[in-house]
Amino acid sequence: MNISIIVGSLRKESYNKKIAEFLIKKFGGNHNLEIVPIDKLPLFNEDIEEEPPAEVIQFKKKLKDSDGVIFVSPEYNHSIPGGLKNALDWCSRVDRVLVRKPTFIIGASNGNVGTARCQSHLVQVLNSPGLMTLNMPNTHVLIPNVQDDFDEEGNFTNERTINYFDKIMTRFVQWIEKNRD
Image 1 (cartoon, helix red, strand yellow):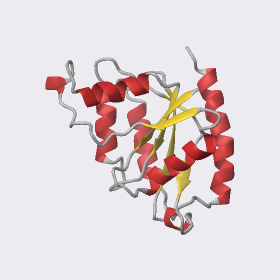
Image 2 (spheres, rainbow, N blue to C red):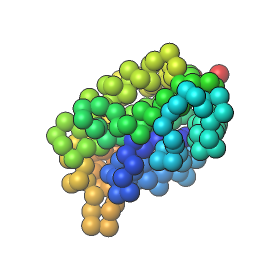
Image 3 (tube, rainbow, N blue to C red):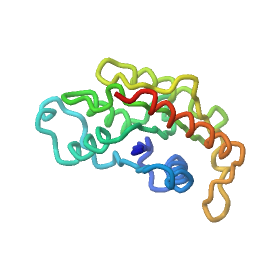
Image 4 (cartoon, rainbow, N blue to C red):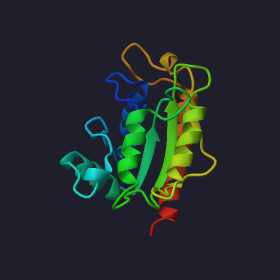
């Protein structure tokens, strides 16, 4: 099973990127998990949507070829990071590669609230007519105070969340299988 991971943060040492890398290490033996980067995507522009740059074509092809997509994102100013929103705008036009694609959302923050507001907004965007993803219901993976969840070597150590990832990844694979066309 091919599962794409989109990290909402562009920061090199992003905690959310580290969570995505952890998922690849932990579950990569069972499934093909790959981070699909968004940092090279130009700003969405309707003037070039019919003939987009190569970066956009490659990005959308990876998502189209995936069986499901995991979003791992921080919260910026109580909402979705701009880079992630831009990537979704590209996906919502022309070939609309995320329509009926199974998805789920994870978010890590160094605050107490986690990424609840971002996730709420992201679900709204994913449900929009141009995207219409099949976001896995009743699933909110909120990781607050994430800076405390890594050891000195950068390993993710939050056992409670790691155990939850075991359950949620099993559920996500079932969600993907249930929604295959």
